[in-house]
Length: 367
Image (cartoon, rainbow, N blue to C red; front, side, top):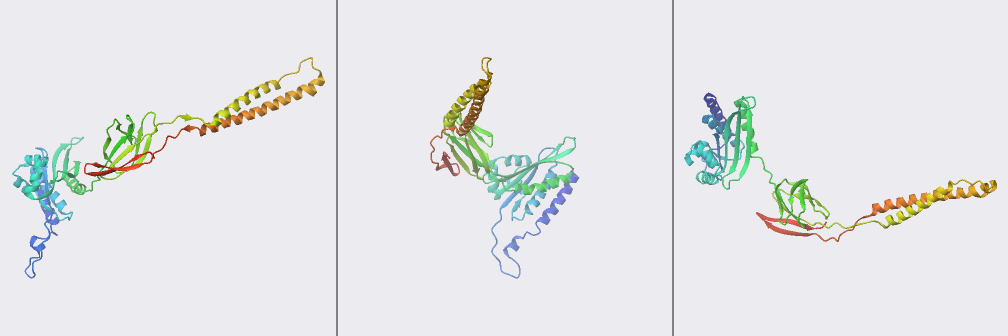
């Protein structure tokens, strides 16, 4: 392991040298040469500390030192003009060993001291651990953090588990550097109030909570369009498509309208009455049309009077059944036209409320 660490160290030094080939020396930046006048030096570049620490006794400190140099080379290769502070200078100023340095990185006060002593704006710090994978073979795990030492804000984080040899570990470390500097999307926030106690609030189908008088908050909402729904028994559901902007707070007042009473259309009653009366009369005429002549009726009366009367009753039954069908259609149309009485609508009103870190716009009313 120590032989491998020595090789890594040599590779790291060579990589660092290559990354710094294009960096001008202070005298070159200032234009101090033997043949020309001095030029004004550019502003001092921001300083960034980089350190990788062993995460356990199984990791050789010399190896993490070599990998720290590789990380330094990767940061320098980004070409952003950083002045980089390595592990040796960092620990010398803090007068701390590896274990104490790891504890310092977890302390906001100690990070502030790093910034003050070394004039460092950011620190890239991490630990490397050696463990076994599912098959029992050795595997690496590293956790890198990019931290703003001025306020302790984490600007980037990468965690990796790597199975394989040292080459696989080196590739994983190199690939992690762009991720540390990837732009972080700031989530939005959503604050919801309702006009009804006990209203259930959901966002994209996921419950936010039940309104009990205090505003309901969702602190991390992915920027974009979301579906907000507020429901309460006896009230119409409030459902809106809302747009949450990155880093902004959206405040919504959900005004629930009480559900109106169901009122049938007059067609239901008229059509129903016609259908019922016509069907009843049609049945009566239909039954009468099926009567048979009695024995005391002469053949002449049967032919000239009885059968024509039965035919007329059959025709009347058919006509009445048709009218009953039309009445049934009127009932169906009336049911389709029936509905809930509309409640009075109010105009929407916009407002602005103070929130932490600024102000937030909101909208309230019935839409």
